[in-house]
Amino acid sequence: MRIQNQNKGRKQNNNKNNFNKNVFLWLGIFLFLMYMFRMGSIGPQSAPREMTYGEFYQLLQGNSESGAIMSAVKVEDRVKGVLSSGAQFTVNIPVGDQDLLRELKKNVPDFDIKPPKTLWVNLFYSLGPMILFIGFLWFFVYRSAQGGGGGRLLSFGKSKAKQITKDKTKITFNDVAGVDEAKEELKEIIEFLKEPKKFQKLGGKIPKGVLLMGPPGTGKTLLAKAVSGEADVPFFSISGSDFVEMFVGVGASRVRDMFEQAKRAAKMGGKGCIIFIDEIDAVGRQRFAGIGGGHDEREQTLNALLVEMDGFDTQEGVILIAATNRPDVLDPALLRPGRFDRLIVIFRPDIIGREDILKVHVKKIKIAKEVDLRSIARQTSGFSGADLANLVNEGALLAARRNKNSVEKEELQESIERVIAGPQKKARVLSSEEKKMTAYHEAGHALLSFLIPDGDPLHKVSIIPRGMAGGYTMKLPIEDRHYYTKKYLMSTITGLMGGRASEVMIFNELSTGAQNDLEKATEIARDMVMRWGMSEKLGSLTFGKREEQIFLGRDITEQKNYSEATAVDIDKEVRRITDECYSRAEKELAKNSDKLKLLAEKLLEKEVMDSEEVKSLIFPESKNT
Image 1 (cartoon, helix red, strand yellow):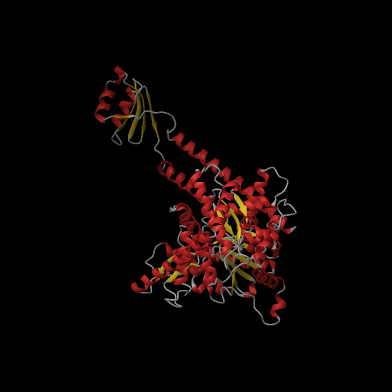
Image 2 (tube, rainbow, N blue to C red; image 1 turned 30 degrees about the vertical axis):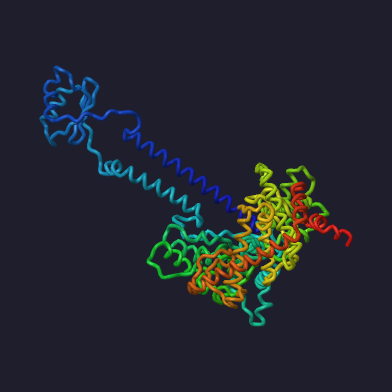
């Protein structure tokens, strides 16, 4: 009830402020238009002619007869008037010339003398435009500052952190799956805030900071949202990129203001407070010796963050939770105990985690009862939580496109293929020769998955173009692998060589269809030699020091710590491994050429075959066993 009243009061204040702003804006526009009208800037007017004193005096002398000057007005040392032609004129006259005044009164029928303007009037006409310009500039800066947060003039240094209340988010820990260890860690933090005496009676202290690390899409931000939904304490959320902007000192000021807000909220609520910084690597990158520039502002912001994390006491109940997928670039001072006391690593889920994640997401769609989520989880090895959410959504869209009442296994299966291999290229028509070559290429991969032990079993083979490929062979591991044996790696390379070996054996020709296979095979062979010490000639050594993005899996640089002679030996060993696997693939396919032709012809007929269909075709005796 109290929160509702506060929100109602805020809305009324906002409406009142908006009304005042509009009145001020229209009043300023009205004054500006009045000033311009007063100055004669509105409406087309011709500039008065500047007349010399001699010319004016000559006209004045004969004006009683000619009537050249119709009217005149004297203001200080200037005379303005209108000629008989209708043209306006102005002329400078000597100050205090009484004879001229008598001539004007005598010869000009409509003559008047206006008193000189006061100092204030002169100042208004000279400084008026500048005052109006400054006023409008102040008004727009004021509005911009209020829109940026803080509600006061030039509040650029106010924190942009948004306070999320329990009623604003519907996400709880029940909506998060596949990260049980991280959930337990964060549940303990929430429990400490709710029951601090339970931990304090034994002398325990609450951690000041928790850093969530992991690949993109694994649920770091979702976990933070779940914390805000579970914790009955104020929760402030902000992105690391919201601190640093174009103004110097803004980032550090926003950090200080954010912690001040959190401390006040914790004190008012009496139960503590949580701050969540998403993508903290945007502001927490490692400092280095530079020569000024844009990095100085970011480093000032980082320094302010370090000071604030040291400065607040755990008794104040303020806990900082941050998330990043680049822990390798964070400053070491930020990661030390006392700042981030707990570092929680969130990896891609295993098969059980993937099944749990799928169960969470399928609650939001209508799914057929016969769908086996464990089978879907087994087919999605390496998928993150975000990938699985996308997979379920794609399945729902496909089912809706087909006018079905529920999402069936067929839609989810196709969604997996869309994510892995890309959408079907229906407009891409292969010639009969290309289609035949694709069939033998994929048949070579599929056949070797049955002939060579220690590799991953076949799941599906297709010659329908998807993504950039003309066809694909999908293999599924029996279980998630954390370590790879040499036998498994050699079998994997041999399976990759099956497509090229089949093409050469049947068509006696090389094609570009094996490009991706060769890239993968070469990469595995090179890692076997350089990273995993699986070369008998070079021994159990690693070569080259890689700097890579830990959770993004991309090499940035590689330091060469070996000689040119060793580099030649490395290349020879990589070549030996790939040649050995290619020869093995050739021999196996040659011994089973009848099975290869049978499978390729069946693929040309059906285009798509699953593992059971392939097995019953090439090993018919297995039907009876």
